[in-house]
Amino acid sequence: MSHQPQSDRVIIFDTTLRDGEQSPGATLNVGEKLAIAHQLALLGVDVIEAGFAVSSPGDFEAVQAIAREVGGRPDSPIICSLARAVPKDIEAAAEALKPAAHPRIHVFLSTSDIHLEHQLRKSRAEVLALTGEMVAYAKGFVADVEFSPMDATRSEPAFLYQVLERAIAAGATTINIPDTVGYRTPKEIEALIQGVRQNVAGIDQVILSIHTQNDLGLATANALAAIESGVRQVECTINGIGERAGNAALEEVVMALHVRQAYFNPILGRPADHTEPLTRINPQELYRSSRMVSQATGMSVQPNKAIVGANAFAHESGIHQDGVLKHRETYEIMDAATIGLMENQIVLGKHSGRNAFRTRLQTLGFQLAEEELNRAFHRFKELADKKKDITDWDLEAIARDEVQADAEPSFRLEHVQVTCGDCTCPTATVTIVTPTGEILTEAAVGTGPVDAVYQVINRLVKIPNHLVEFAVQSVTEGIDALGTVTVRLRHEDRLFIGQASDTDIVVAAAFAYMNALNRLARSLPAAAPAALSA
Picture (cartoon, rainbow, N blue to C red):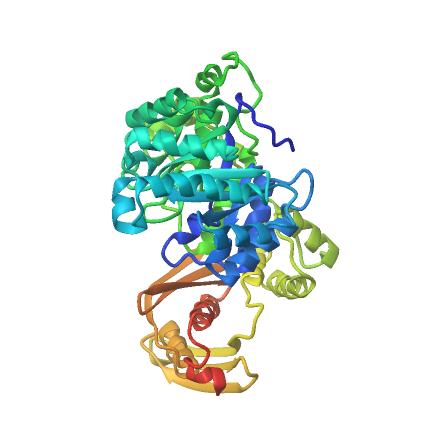
């Protein structure tokens, strides 16, 4: 993969693992981040922003693991870490990125007066000096440095131009313009980008990038307006997840460029009928990527979501149905198969071997460690005895459960049994193993089978929490389908997500709850949960 600047295509910078993870409750563990990063590489993104290395040991580990396992080859995507304009941030990013063949440090610093006065508490002169110093410092570690003036769209233009010139002079190779609070409209974005291109010395020597937030629902429109104005890198996330209302959705930007290629070709200096894609994205991996991120984060995709929503290719109106049956293009501007949405074929059965299972998971973007693979294969065999047709979606659900399993000591669900019915009081018996290895068993009565299970688990684990969301979703069609349960727990002001899949949704609910509780437990002081030392 070439990483040289090109003006006739759009670079896709994916920040699902950094900005996307800032969605409330969407915290991912290292294994989940690594699985998503492998899928992003399969999808064909140019840059993976793997995290904010200095923010926590977990983020540092994730950036380092992705740099090593996803970004370690000459043809790998660029692996990027975010860093404030602070030496320790840049040092942490540089250290975490060492295994990457193509590392990038992404330095950011506020430039709007409201940020300078109320958050950064620095003068314009100080910001100007710091920009040059910290970009140059990052340049001392890696050749590829991106600079973002945070809240650029609310910054005074003349000062913004000065800051960008200073960053370029210090060695920045990409200049990113963030609409940090999702405030601007497409016309305003167009004017801002044109102003940057006309007034910043050296801007034609770097990649010009855009980062748009979706607070007013304009993120994708603003990103496309920026492309029309000369931007050649777009920062986006799978499913548009991210801080507050999220970011520009990768699948929307990519498919807009795909479907409207004849329109965008001349903008990028190509003949209108040019057929070479405008991005390196493989669109057939879009739907799979969407599902993986949705499952890992516990953030369901709204049915009417563009491109990857359940209703994106559904037609309720009789007139529409009639038109599509006669000629698909009467009411569909793209083929569902283009994004990888098609009837899923049976890929494995109960007589399939371990090697075939491993190979299929690798094809689906999962690189499981030996122990994870053993557990996943055991679950696959169990499922094959219960379920006649095994699909890719089933395999993905199994693999995701293993990837999100805790690598460190945690509570482990050993046994769950439930008695319920219309004339029976719902009763659950649960056995867990504590992080210290102690086996605990308890029983409880609840208003329903899931409530009974959760009451038992709470008695055993003894970690205060409040269940704020419980959702069940079928992985595939049919009465024997795997059910995926997603739960969100609140502890104080933080949300924790857990997810698990099983043909028995009560069992899936128990494992999902335990996953969420383990994430909660890891965030507490070591002595806080009573059962940790039980």
